[in-house]
Image 1: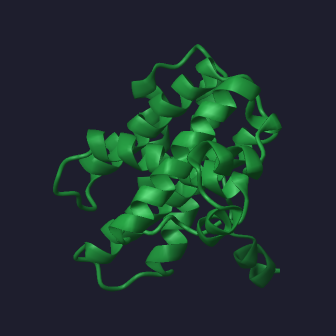
Image 2 (image 1 turned 180 degrees about the vertical axis):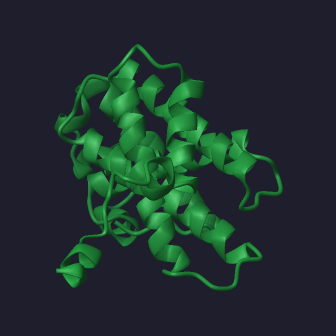
Length: 204
């Protein structure tokens, strides 16, 4: 799903807000799976055609709600001026872990919501990290900032899922583990863990 656009016309914003509010109200009454586009448009007093001008289906609407909530949570915890440095990255990781664990505790596993939460979280992380990497003073990358950001988003989200299901490590410990893996990498943390097979072959 595409990232929700940031700069939109006020009338568009108002229509989307009406649709989202209507969805939340109906979902509370009927449950997520029972909500139909017809229910949403009737509650919002908006034509079905208008709904489809903004969203592909109800799941796209749910995704946009989750995406904006994740972005709001991260933005509220991060400094106003964000940049690619160890402290900001650590704060991003810790906030993601704690937020996902909070969601995990409050919500039952859902075949509908879980993939949308994962996708929205990874997309917000990827967008933030890509922006930071592009703004950094580093000029020579071994791979594109976009690729690095996407790989890091997978690492952070995967760690958040794992940590939400355990009780042994604190948020600080889990954050430090993820930070070390991202900033140091396997070859630095355990130099002998990944031997270079090409050297063995050439020596035969």
